[in-house]
Every structure is written in C-alpha cells, then in structure tokens.
Image (cartoon, rainbow, N blue to C red; front, side, top):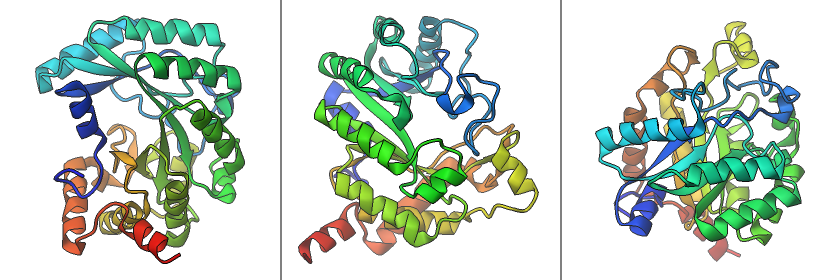
Length: 310
C-alpha cells in the first residue's frame, strides 16, 4: 500500500521501471463485433461513436506517428521517457492473429515504449488470440484490459453488450491459464442497477482476484442511444457524493492485491450530457481520498472481514 488507501497501478509502474511511465492511447483502426464489424452502427448503449476513450487521438496518422506525438506531449507535461502503448478505442483483438502481431510489434518498435495494454471485449478472445497475447506477456510489460461493465446479465442485455457474464468468465479463465494479467473495466451507476447489485460486482471481482480494475462512472454522451434516453428523461445519473461513497464501498470489497488503474472517468467535453460534475476529475479523486480517510477505510477491508468470518 502507498500513501493512498488503495493499491495504485501507476506506483507499481514506477517501481518496475524506476521512474515515470505514461500510457499513450492509440487507435489502430479496429472496430467491434457489436457494431457488425463497422464503425457506423451504434453498438453498446453508452458508447461514443468514435469508440470509448478516443478523446484526443488523431486516427488520421499512422500508429507510429500517434505514439511519437503522444511521447512529445508526455515528455513536455510530465518529463516522462518511458511509455505504455495503449490500444484503447473499440475491440483491439478483433482481427486475425497475423494483423494483431504486426500492429503490436509496430508499437513496441517505437523508442521508449516499454509495454503494451490491449483493451477488448470478452467475446473477442478466442484461444489463438489468447495464445498470441501470452507471447507478449512473456516479452514485455503487458496488460489485457477487458470491458465487462457489470456481472448482471439483465444489465448487459439492456446495454446491448452482445455477451453475457459467462462469456467473460470463459475469456478470463483462458487468460489466467496463460498467465496474463487482466484489468477489468466496470461502470457504476448503470440504469436499473441497485447499490447492492453494483457491490455484488465488486464481491465477484474479489472472488476472482482480478489483477487490476478500472472503475468508471456512467457517462451520458450526445449521439449515443443512452444520450437519447437521457434526454427523454429515462435515465437517472448519480450525484457526486453518491458516486464517491459507492467507490469507497467498492474498494473495501475488492481483493487487497488488485491494482487500481482508475477510479473515475472523463468523457469528451463536447459530447458530455451528464454528469457535468465529472468534468472536474481531480475534485472527484480528492473527494474519494477524503472519504477513505474519513472512514479510515482501505482497499480490501470488507473482503478480509468476510474471509475471517468464514
């Protein structure tokens, strides 16, 4: 544990590489099976038309150039000289193995890139792709990031995810069998989910002892089906205090060894309909730290209490 009351992924990177390491998000031209293999269909209920996390990426230049431009920004802002190439928008394993290998190798060939993070969906991880990812796990600092969002099948169906929780478990077990480190993405505040259901997702992530987790709040973006529902009054959004309290409860239920990659999110300003309070990311993060301190809470405390009671 660090100065924080949870296990911070960025600090693990510093320990591993002896200094600042920053992720550079890249768009390698992938799409998503939930869009029928195109970028024109709406996909999941909440997804940005350009793919989640595509803010600031210039997809009109090559993968190498995207990384080089990202390096310039990170060097100027943070003096960083080591980088993780993060394949972020859409499903970055949704292609033949030969194409994936070419793209991943291209990223690793850029000077200063010391690792890869590959974001994808659980239904885009067949055995041959997992075998390929295991090769990169053996040769570099590698994380597989899987978008799950919720363990509840009714929620996944409402979100039009196109897969169920069993699909995630199958992909997760395949990754674990190959020794891959997995970071799971979940969303808090999904329509129709109760607090108890959201915390059940935390309990399940603790049971699985996932290597890492990204906690996102639900962003409502213009131009998405969720945005249309919101504008019709059909979606309730968490207030900041409720979100902060929920994140702390979630952290207490996670396994204490799980790395925390993210505790909130920042949607594109030009598309964000709600919650507008999320635009002040540091205020949200500071509020989470303050609530942890106020409660004297730490990551894994509730998990350990439950283990001790068995």
